[in-house]
Image (cartoon, rainbow, N blue to C red; front, top):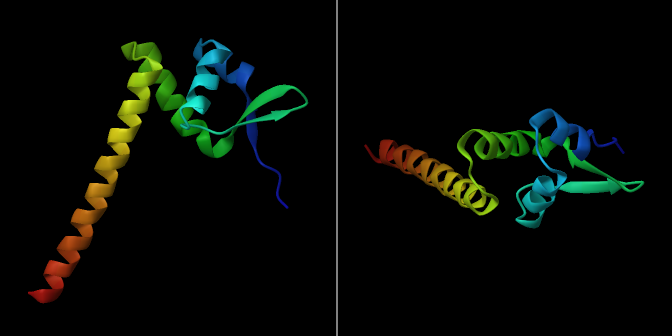
Length: 96
């Protein structure tokens, strides 16, 4: 079994000038996965892009956690609709 690549929450927060509670709140809203190893919190590598986007939204635009959650929900919905449009275009081309 391959080991998961992770970054320590404290290291991430120090780099992005955030409180560690910010990451805990992201996890609470199911935006990222955080794991505990020997009483130290880690962000799983696959969640780093999401955590970094959330950090930028918070730091640069002063968006709170609830706003970040709403933004990610809307982005997910837009992505699904884009995929639906692509599929419908393919079906339309098939019938032309």
